[in-house]
Amino acid sequence: MSQDGAGIDLETSLGYLLKEASSVLRAAMEEVLRPLGMTVTHYSCLELLAQRPGLSNSDLARGAFVTRQSMNVLLQALERDGVVTRPAEAAVGKVLPARLTARGRRSLDKATAAVRSVELRMLSGLDDAEQAQASRALRSMIDALRGSTSIPVTSPARRSPAG
Amino acid sequence: MSQDGAGIDLETSLGYLLKEASSVLRAAMEEVLRPLGMTVTHYSCLELLAQRPGLSNSDLARGAFVTRQSMNVLLQALERDGVVTRPAEAAVGKVLPARLTARGRRSLDKATAAVRSVELRMLSGLDDAEQAQASRALRSMIDALRGSTSIPVTSPARRSPAG
DNA sequence: TGACTCATGTCAGAAGTCTGACATACGGTC
DNA sequence: GACCGTATGTCAGACTTCTGACATGAGTCA
Image (cartoon, rainbow over all chains, first blue to last red; front, side):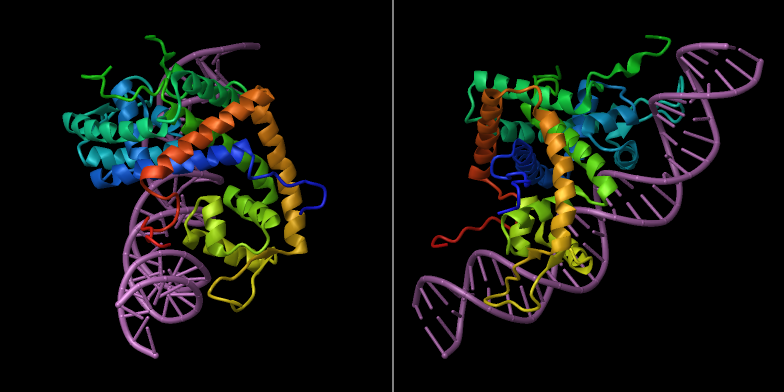
């Protein structure tokens, strides 16, 4: 086909497969989230806040894999809808810790159930050992690509005076 | 950690890891493609055409995991830039087979080298067996998600009984 | 203390992608 | 031959996310 086999064989490329898997997963999540009036980023933000109350806008952006500008747009909408609250002013620096409201938590519960079912379906063909192996492989690819950058959820952002 | 274990543990979720890996890969590709004036979708389109000359707009959209509308916008720009050609009229139905021009092939060659280096770096921590295992796992996840519900990119998933 | 660096929140404009809609072409069925 | 469902190419508008830019606050170091 090509001259000197320069092309990346899409049939066997792990990168392409990764993109495909991610695309299919995203589509499946959007499908179950849409009836709830949620996008994937929207859901990710809520899930992050449930597990790590008080995350900042920038923390949430890193955890949801979008820019802090995009997350800011979303957070403003979520605040307006009463799903999330942020203090009007920063207690310490410029960081505004966000938290779920009761309504936000209810909203998240439904979404979590839906997303969980998608994930279970995705993993239905893999036993525990295979899942662990896949997890290690993905982690290896991530680390190799980003050299050593930080972790999305386990945020090191707490390194300020108080802690 | 929530009330009844409702939350999806982002620390261990394979879905989250998949999203993270895909995000990091995409960022790494954008980084090397940007100097060439190319986006990831742009590159995907060219790579697809190199391996399967004559693919239609809809084919390319499916292969690049975007809608055919998005791919159409891109294809028109690529035609304008002399990177891709399509016949003015369809020979058979409405399908317009696209092909790379010489310029498109040159453009792709540079991009392919850049992307290949990214993929090699991503896989640098995995031996052949691990890569094969990861490939099988991803394929399994894709098939499991596609099986029941939606179709990745295209329109409503109505299959005709005789189709 | 002052300068430098890094991170944050935010605004504004640009780019990419999506949903909705329409006309058309193919294939099978009645 | 007419009809219906599916698939394609395309236009238009809306939405989401991104890049660029700015001011502010914290930490480091001389």
